[in-house]
Length: 120
View 1 (cartoon, helix red, strand yellow):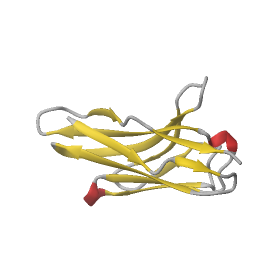
View 2 (cartoon, helix red, strand yellow; view 1 turned 120 degrees about the vertical axis):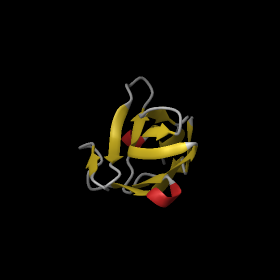
View 3 (cartoon, helix red, strand yellow; view 1 turned 90 degrees about the vertical axis):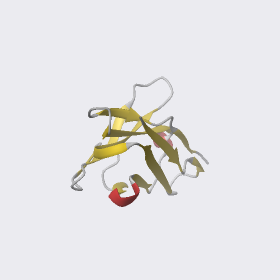
């Protein structure tokens, strides 16, 4: 089993910044892609940003130029630096990792989410 724990959410004013972190733990054998998703009230969960084990990244059009995803493979941690935040960025942010353990094959794992609220 792989456990993902997000942190760094909170209340921020429009134009402000936040940095989210997601640490993976457990009997991890390998972690492939990691990513951040978000779900606003009444909306479907959507991809915000993803990063491969080699460091290749992709972003939703709505966050390009404002958000940056990175990872520390030694710490099994992925980060999301969010700048120039807008009210429409308000959502619960979830971390996802495609990982394998010493007894389980490659599969997706999700964190429980961290709330980001952008409001004045």
